Image 1 (cartoon, rainbow, N blue to C red):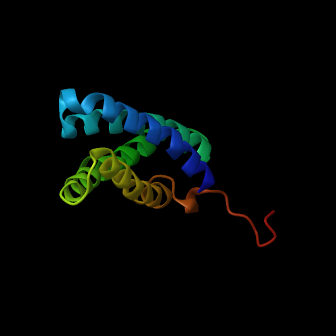
Image 2: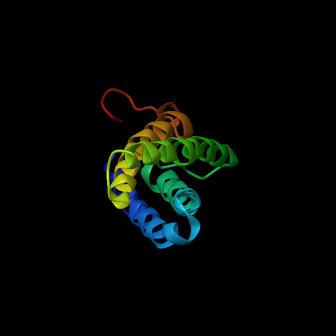
Image 3: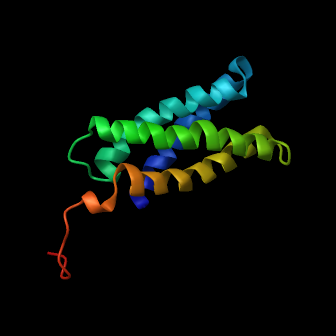
Length: 128
């Protein structure tokens, strides 16, 4: 979880920076699409190899990652953004809160769908 959070800090800075840079020119939805897409690419490589210790990144991993992350970032997060935007200002606060909600949803998807723990080598009770 600590590795995921560390990758998430960098990923969040990338996402938020691009979103803030682009939202006035592209609109909220398209800016969010671009910023989260850049973050997804970074996240796939770094989380797969570093956080979840995959020996290699496979097409299966890529497809599952795209499906789960796409669902979170392109469906769940915009929904959260639009719901919160009706209640809270400024927009940057709304975006940061939506990133927090997406953090939890993505970790669960990666841990249990993309790189499930049962695919890792088993250890005996002594950890050997």
